[in-house]
Image (cartoon, rainbow, N blue to C red):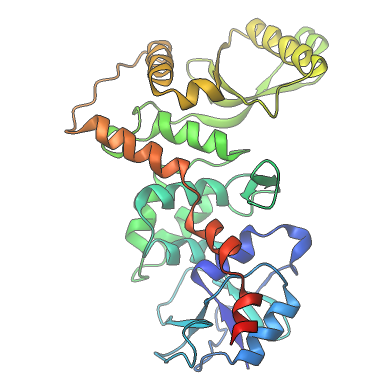
Length: 336
C-alpha cells in the first residue's frame, strides 16, 4: 500500500540530517493518493526505512476522508485540492512525502504566526534544530527559499493554510545560518504588532565584495555579514560564545572587522548577553535604527506585552523539535 507523509511528519523528514534519510525525488502532478489509512506493519516498515526521524502519531495524506485504525499511531488528512507543480516526492518503495513547500502550507493551518515565521526561516536557512546536537542545531544546505514558498502558496488557490502561509512568508528571510541569527533577525525586523522593532528587513549572510587591496587584508574575495542592509552599508554580527572564542578566532574577527571598515561598512555587534538583556537589546535597536535613518515609534497598544510574547515564543523549543525528542515513532510502535 502507498504511504504518503504530510504535515509535521513531512516536516520531520525535510529537517532531518541528510545522512539519516533517503533522497526525495519529485513525482508527476498526476500522482494518486491512497484511500486508506496505513497499518502498523506499514509504519514499522517506515521506521525501518528511515529510523529515528519520525514521531508519533504519523500524519499521512489520503484522497478521501478516512478514519484511522489507531489514532495514536497515524492521523490521516484528506488532500483533494490542486497544487502548483509537483507537490509530492518519492522516498523509495511505496513511501512518499509532501514537498517542503506543501508541508509549510499544511503546517500553517495550526501553527501560531510567530512559530510559522520561525519555521520559514529554518526551512529557508542552512540549519536544522536538533536537541541531540551540542549547539542545539546542525548545519546543512537550505532545502528551499522564501521565493519558492511564496510561489507555491500563491499558485495553489483553495489550499487550506494558504492565507496564513502567505502572511508568514512576508516576514521570512532566506539564508539564516543559525537559530540565533533567526531570532535576532525576527526580533529586529518583525513589525510592532508582532513584538518586533519594525526595522527594514536585512539580507542574511550577505556577501560584501572586496577590492584587490581589501582582499589582501581579508585573505578572501568577499566577506559575509550576519545581517546586512546594502542601501545603508550597515551590518550586524551576532557574536555567540560558541562561535567566537580562542585567540585565532579573535584575530580572524579583528582582521575581518578592519576589512569591512575599509568598505565603508558600519558594523555593529550583538552578543548573546546583549540579546538576552532586553534593555541592552532595545538600546542596540535604537542605535541601529539611527544608522538606518529610521525611528522606533511603536503605535500599537500593549507593545511591551507583544515584545514579551515574541521573546517568550522564540525562547521555547518549537513543536516540530519537541515531538521528535519526546514522542519517537519507534517507542509508540513498541507500545501498541
